[in-house]
Length: 173
Image (cartoon, rainbow, N blue to C red; front, side):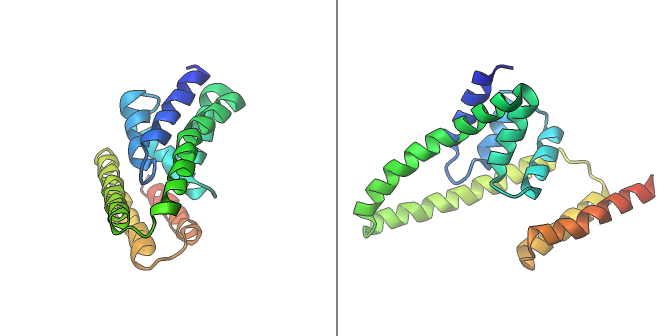
């Protein structure tokens, strides 16, 4: 793999990732470029979500470094951030002028609903390929309940459930 391939792949994610790059990230990395399979993608995404910072930026740096070293990490991150930054600066300039317009506010509300739908769709696609292990299902349910329902902080959830997962899976083996 070449650095330019990383730049172009992550540029595509950044340019098309309205509402977040998570949904398009899986499509580009797994389906289009075939850099990782679903299991590798899910594992790396889980690691990136546990690290501080933006998940997709973490992903770009780790994947870029894996394939092309520090230069690949820089190119992937640059590709990911270049288009959104240009779009953001442009839209912010227009929004400052038209923020009071009801149609503009309605369009932003619709865009946020579409972004939520994309995130749910990506989660369902990823869940299809995860092994149907009862322990993993229970741990996933506990993580969902802790984060979505109880609103516990992610580091606390990981601190409890990661060791529990290792112990439960290790005890069965």
